[in-house]
Amino acid sequence: MASDDDFTGYTALIVEDNPQARVGYVANLKAHGFYVEHADSVMSAREKLRKRCFDLAWVDLGLGDPAVFSGLEGKEVIDFIRALSDATFVMVVTVIDDANTAVQFLKGIGADDYVTKDRLTSRPLSELFGRIKTGMKKYERLGRVTVGSVGARFFGESGEDGFYAHLTRTYLKIA
Image 1 (tube, rainbow, N blue to C red):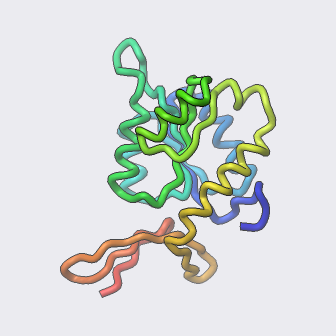
Image 2 (cartoon, rainbow, N blue to C red; image 1 turned 90 degrees about the vertical axis):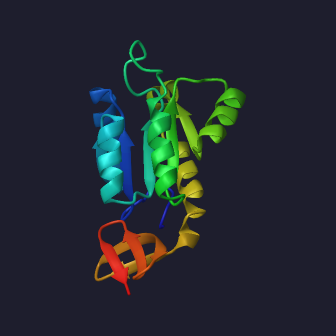
């Protein structure tokens, strides 16, 4: 990774049900070089996660209508990510503004870091991208490969008929 704000070649999944916020997050991450996909619900996030491994998952913790749901549907997305792999850096967007409460809560649900919604609208994001860069470095040990001009992070599992590696842009079977 070149600088703290250059994420060229990295993938991000934004899971946010508010269309205006989602458009803003997509634009911001794309401006920093991420290839971005987005989902507006737990179901659409699961569908995208089944097809691709993302370097970053940007998850709104309070997905859904709190009057109908628990207001913590983002936790379901994080559980699904962690069931697939520990190789994705999970940044949670939350309204919890007390740092101690947020850190303890988020560690309990498997998130790597968090940002409050008011922070996203009131301050520059350069510090946040530095935190993402630092946090993503711990996943680099899992490996990156280059196939042609496509760089990809990989993880895999051994099966009866070989080793399967899920690359961010393709699937590869090594028998």
